[in-house]
Length: 380
Ligand SMILES: *Cc1c(COP(=O)(O)O)cnc(C)c1O
View 1: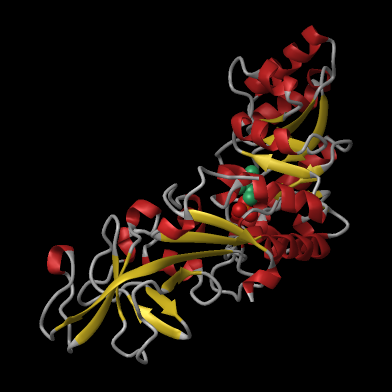
View 2 (view 1 turned 60 degrees about the vertical axis):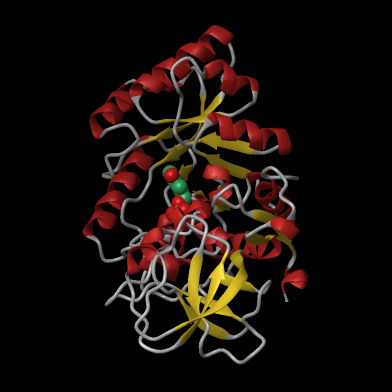
């Protein structure tokens, strides 16, 4: 399955390699951890940037049956590949979109009473009790029915009767911070909802929720970032296998004298005579400019054949400079591939340097990269 326009790998400046076995292993690890709850998968935003087609096919082959996307449009892509899957649309029912959802057997995650009314009316008109999730807010104040709206539904359960509510859902705001007091409040609110709607299967936990607390599992868990090897809980060891590797080729190596600078803004002055390798990849490929190296703040690092190579100066649109002075002869050569993140440089470490999270780095990977999908055997 192809995820993006094919690029000739021989002509690519940057390449993304996705280990589909590692993805499936990560799903199985989370499934085993949260069993007997069902383990679904969040595959929104093009499978967290890694390519929705190969991602959902691998997860389905591993045994995943339920998928969460943000948009109906993404749901259509999943439906075209997986005719049997349950597909939930997290951003809910857009006005007038009910027919499109129904035709592709997509389930809206109804996030307001307006959406509940619209789906119920649509189902009545069609005389079909179509499936949908109902999202109740438990304190995040993003999507989901408010406590007041939820009361309305408790008093009028007939409002839910025209359709089949297959999932009672809420979302945790602070699962990545186990000591945050909002966690306890959300759990208490969700348990109360479960009492009010005892017949609906319930789902609360994202990746961080799965990795931190078993009393969040309920009937279904919804991991996203952990499937893709990203760090769900900051400050604790990441148990997931790396899935995505971003590499860029060296296009030239040059000597630069002590006291000189490299790149736009002359932001970093070399403290010694240096060898600098130029990589054919930049912020246009989704590598963040905020990961640049500036005096006195060193930036992110990359990796070449067992050696850390620090970034030098600013990341530009199509180029990144790295310091290869300390490498043995023959490693940093024109045409060699340098890992920007992957098994040796955690995507979350690069993200931290850029003041963001691995999620944003992965979902922002550029369309100019060549992409390849491999198995674990091919990775070693
Ligand atoms: C994105 C999302 C998830 C998955 O979150 P991760 O932190 O990536 O595991 C689960 N539930 C909802 C409602 C989401 O929006």
